[in-house]
Image (cartoon, rainbow, N blue to C red; front, side, top):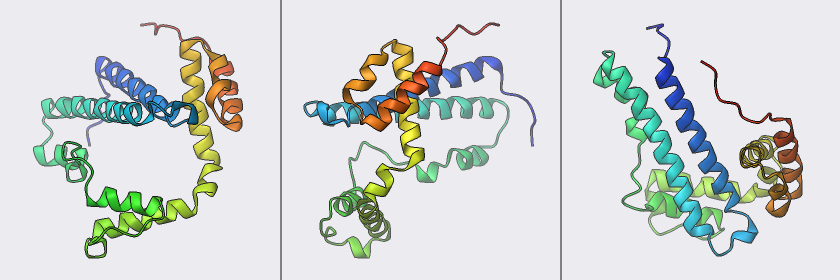
Length: 189
């Protein structure tokens, strides 16, 4: 295995893309809050696709470097996990509709039992719906949300916004995260 470090310009570009994706993820969470009743559908779709596209850019930038360095097409495709890639262009498919039905406690869509992926996704939706309160209080989920919101509040210098829309336990933890973060400084070379 090659032990060459990632070139610094590439490393910085990847860090920038990941930061952009994280910011979009934070906005996805923000637009799920109850005060966003008029814009949640539009904005959650915009920001989730922005985050996905940004991470795709990061993956393909790394893949371009690997290709330039002589990685085989087969190796690159394996690392990119292209067999897992799903296109949004076709819209939601049977598996997504089955998952949603399970989440909402509805009957499985017709034909779900015959389709392995749809059946699995339906059961996953049912499981998530049954365990929603357990997931709601999951410390890892709360911490992740608090970190995203706290980071965004620090970057925007708007710590007071944390109290206006978040659940109290997330707002409290997000404020702690934001307060311990130093103001961002430009990287020294």
